[in-house]
Structures are given as C-alpha cells and as structure tokens.
Image (cartoon, rainbow, N blue to C red; front, side, top):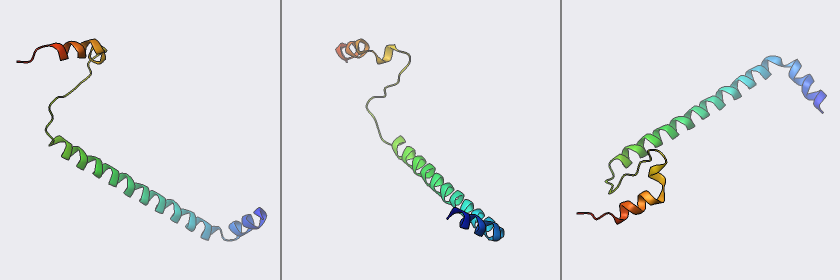
Length: 80
C-alpha cells in the first residue's frame, strides 16, 4: 500500500509539491487569523476591564502580602 503511494508521489512530484505548499500556506494563514483574533479579543477585554470601578486592589510584594496574619491585622484595624 505504501509502495503505491510512494510511486504516485515520485511520478507527480510537482503536483505533490504544489499540494504540500498549499496545505502549509493554508495552515499558516488560518493559524495567523486565529492568533490575531485572540489578540484582538484580549485587548478588547483588557480595555473594558480597565473601565470597571473596583473597591480594592490587591498586589503581592514579597511573601508578606500573601500571609494570613497580614490580612487578619488589616481586617482588625479600625477604618475611619
């Protein structure tokens, strides 16, 4: 079975090369479109999320910000 396929590829090498090139170009084109769509969607989401008001912003600076004692102390501190 494979010998027949190899004979056909060798006999029509130009046609095989054109087919292979077409498949590679089509795959590259569709992958590029997919990546472009994902990038555009991420940019649109980030733009919309930047407009959402928030009550608190949490950032992690070292291991201290993630310990529970820091959060407990902050919760117990009186807010005026």
